[in-house]
Amino acid sequence: MNVIRWPRLLTPTHLSQLIRKQKNPLKALQIFNEAKSRYPNYHHNGPVYATMINILGSSGRISDMKQVIEQMKDDSCECQDSVFASAIKTYAKAGLVDEAISLFKNLPKFNCVNSTESFNTLLQVIVNESKLDTAHHLFLENCYGWEVKSRTRSLNLLIDALCRNNRSDLALQIFLEMNYQCCYPDRETYRILMRGLCDDGRLNEATHLLYSMFWRISQKGSGEDVVIYRTLLDTLCDNGQVEEAVEILGKILRKGLKAPSRCRRQIDLSRCNYGADTQAAKVLINEALIKGGIPSFDSYNAMAVDLYSEGKICEANQVLDEMREEGFRPAVLIYEAKVAALCREGRVDEAVEVIEMEMVEGNCVPTVKLYNIVIKGLCDEKKSAFAVGYLEKISRQLGCVPNKETYAILVDGLSNDGRYIDASRMMEEMIIKSYWPSADIFSTLIKGLCVIRRPYEAVMWLEEMVSQAKMPDHSVWHSLVACVCSDMGFSDIFSVMLERLRKFV
Image 1 (cartoon, rainbow, N blue to C red):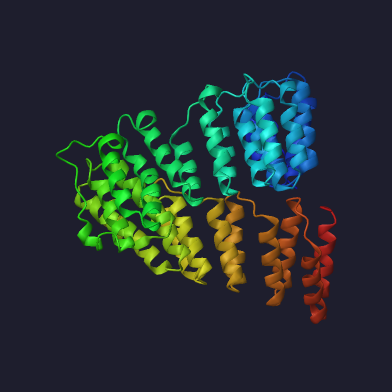
Image 2 (cartoon, rainbow, N blue to C red; image 1 turned 120 degrees about the vertical axis):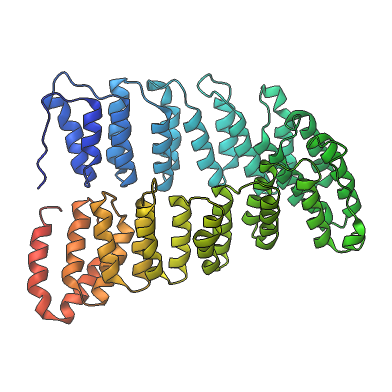
């Protein structure tokens, strides 16, 4: 039993640190509630409430989280919008969308002056549920209030939802109304709408949308815009309109990318059989988008990441090679996109080479996010034993620390490969680092240990699971009982462990 060492003087910062250290969210809640009775002059502030709400939300203690939110409202302490955004995500994950909507509608009762993040979070949740009418009403009810500082992202969410439902015509209407809303489209607006119009075959509207970019967001000629231009030009080529694509490309180079006349390159259509070879034409156009103007890091970076995200690895590799030839050093974002693309196609050995060789030669340091992508790829290909080696590499790298996701991927991967003893050791290390596994990870490992007839370790992890206020489902109990019944020599151990578990239940 952990004994809490209370300080002589309690501050909100100290209390936040104290409750974060608790692996059991109910114990953290007990400490949180006990603080006021122990220190009559102490008052919770916004960050303490945020810590407690996030702990309860991440552990699925919905009713307890709701009570703490009510307590925060009664205290009238100043709180950040991010607290409510986190709570809304928790409600959504639990399938309680109505609770999320109710919380947002009650925000005026809290001491929170800006609800932009929670508004956009709720809008995203409703859109993901395909409740477009509800999203539309929510926007109309809240878009003009002073609490929502910016409406561009909200409109982008609505435009994206309509485009994904093949209603780019309605999305275009929202876009055209943005000026009247005193709201101006950004690069993301154009990217979403351009993709939607092209997917729906509305190439005339898409072309006019591109021209509007020239005087709205491309006035200074940004290299990042090449991804939006490419969407339209590729679609035109796919529709057999190669000559139209080339004509528009010329306007893009002049008005969009602001390329000097001496730098513009003309496409030789004979290299693609005068447009008959569509794929070759698209490659030439992509090359012209980058090299036809003044080559920049932004244009190479945007094009490479976009191609990798579409799974066009060969074309993206070519862009990467050209980028190096022009003297630009690829950023870690490109390598993350490349490794993710390779892992999606099961080419995990090539993904490993990117980290082991390509990035070393490019003098680029991997991030923990990049390592996690490779580790996940290795585990998906049943190479979890090899993936474990990256844990030591991450730890040795200066400024790079394995996070909760790293350990969760490894424990899950080792369990799926039947390496339950190794998975058990990995989870021990995970808990030592104060990363608390999910109930699913606990359940998978416990059932696996039962399969290989290791009931003692299985019950030990069951005890740990319950001590963190995570309740096992019936399948876990079924596995344990089946394991014990198969060999009555384990029954004494099981009885002792059940007796120890009673103090947690």
